[in-house]
Length: 483
Image (cartoon, rainbow, N blue to C red):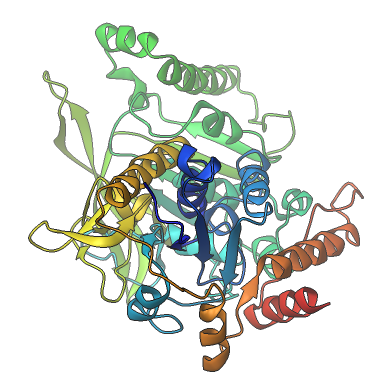
């Protein structure tokens, strides 16, 4: 038997992990039947909702950004309250949340680049791909300028982030005008001197981590030639090819690579000039290198001038091993895209090695593994930066199941006479210019109207143009909410 007093939940982070955690609780049979009353607030440090979907996905991926439509539908129902531009630990402390909510779910994701511990990684011209993504997605907490003077650029990694960043570096800026790319990003990419982007993976073409669609999209931009090294395919045995054909995703990606390589070799044999996928002239090249383990970033006068790799292979047991052969490349910039890492939160137990909040099945635990009543985690900050949206949904089911078990066991009980708006009065008293769902819809409409007043390279209206300055975002949101 549940208490008639509403159970109040705070969720920290409004990306998919946060929204799905709140939605999973709202869709529980006990809540839908009215047996358990729930009030839920979702907080975000940014003035806008949707987290990594708004600020971590390449702007030329409308299919992925379409996830925002689903998240928008959930938050737009009105039973889950959004409160943005609130920094956990300063604007709102753990103690202040505990006073006003019966439980909290941390869903802050993983925004920082994982480390690549090799000599020279800190040289000028060495960057984290996550920082580059935040720049071209116009995250207001990142600088508006980005150095793009290097002609030859390395992208270290074989995941979707590496491919997104490589595609953005090699794609013509005008092609991006059909997206929501802001003016300063378009201007920066248009002035970029990049001619060659090199993507390096430690394993072979059959062990890449990206999707078939991501692979095919690499060749779509006008003016881009895909360049492959035949040697990277020569060491693949007949037995390995059988394994490749047995997995649909791997087979599709490998077939794409082999198709590109066959066309490349045909043109070379015929003495034909290379073209892009549309038959047009080549202005930029995207090189895909496999079997390359990063050894050292080479520098002169404190700046990147190249990179050293060791050629690798799979041994008889399928383990990756070095061959001892070293290869150097002349480069002007290096981007590491070897994964994300979650950041610690004030007062919340954290595993620095894994970059996650310590937890068991979503229950946040102390250093000795004891659950902390009423404190939970979901998404990448719970399990690490692996998996896609589907995994985030299943994470939410596990976390909310743990929360419900704690309610049913009497570990959590709704406090009496909680005031739903006390958190807003607290923020007002601190002078925090928080944003609301109504404010977001006003900002959303404003950005769409900005796009409608601009045209892309084909003269078509743009879908939207992002507002990039935090103060301007907050002003538009708060004025729109009070209108």
